Amino acid sequence: MRQKVLWFLPISMLLLLFCKPEPPKVVLHNACSGYTKLRKISFPTEHTKTLLDSLGLPDSLGEPDRSATYQIDTRICIHPKDKRRLKALDSIFPQAEIVEGEERGVIHIWSGINALSFDSVPFSRRVLILNGTGKPGLARDVAYRFTVRFGLASLEPQTADADTFSKTVLYCPSKDVHLAKRLINYLRTGKVEVRTNLVDMILVLGADMLNPTTKAKHSRGISIVVKKPLFTLFVYKNGTMIEKYPVALGKNKGDKQKVGDNRTPLGDFTITSIEDSHDWEHDFGDGKGPIKDAYGPWFLRLSTLASETKSGKQWKGIAIHGTHDEASIGTRASEGCVRMHNADVDSLKRMVRVGTTVRIEE
Image 1 (cartoon, helix red, strand yellow):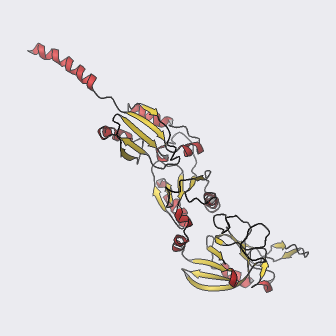
Image 2 (tube, rainbow, N blue to C red):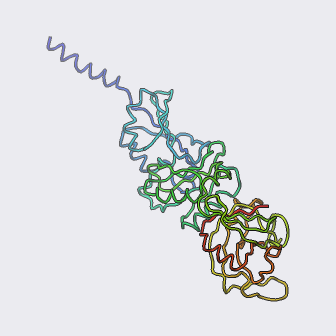
Image 3 (cartoon, rainbow, N blue to C red):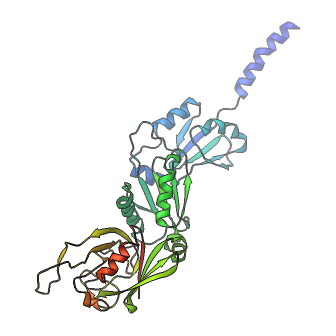
């Protein structure tokens, strides 16, 4: 009897050996090929391949996801009976979304930006801005403002799927939450979401960026409205008008369309700098030569980016400032700027700050 048992034992072990299921095959798909191209990252990274090999999971490279070249999150498509393998995959693909697949023995991993590893690459933090609004130039303008206002370097702005991104979201690593909240507060719309393993911050501009109601709802403190037909600048605090000043506008009527047309641009702007202009001169091209104190005591420079002007064109040198010719206030007299009495611009300067919103409207 004992001999029969000993004889049967090797046969059982052989059966178990041959019947033991092989580990599922892992197929990696690049769902952030646009980002890896921008960052010049090979896919998959050597770190990811090493980790998969250490788990004994055979891996292969599948077709990239052409419909989502900037996908933030990672998706794992797996058959329910293969889910015991998920614990091992958690260490490589944090925060992955689990989707039940139909093919047993094959795990499809659609790698988003949060699946990439930068352990061996000296990357400096940047922000990638994806324009999901359909408005040309918006992402580039936001990138420019982030650089000027916060000193934050930007990757080349890209276009996102306008149907996918309806809300503005800033994805960031946990260490950058404080800065991310400042950026969103500056935009006056959107929310912050933390993602593990990100190095760069990823800002998706949604349709809410184009909604003036949303922007107004987020406005706090002092704001300015210039009503061109009234030649008047109104100052509001928390939505209540607290002051108004007479102004001079561009020599010609209508919205600015080209450089040198002497029109004041329409749009929703912000003050980007407050500059002491006491000693500035300007030649108005009228044969009188450079005029001293042409801009009065203060020059409140406006952003006037393409995303902010009604014309969709970017302008330079537009500001609210004082004047050497106070008799011109209340008339069409400037080259496009908003002129004020010197005492008035001095008073206004005490109320505003960099970032104060300025709307110029007909």
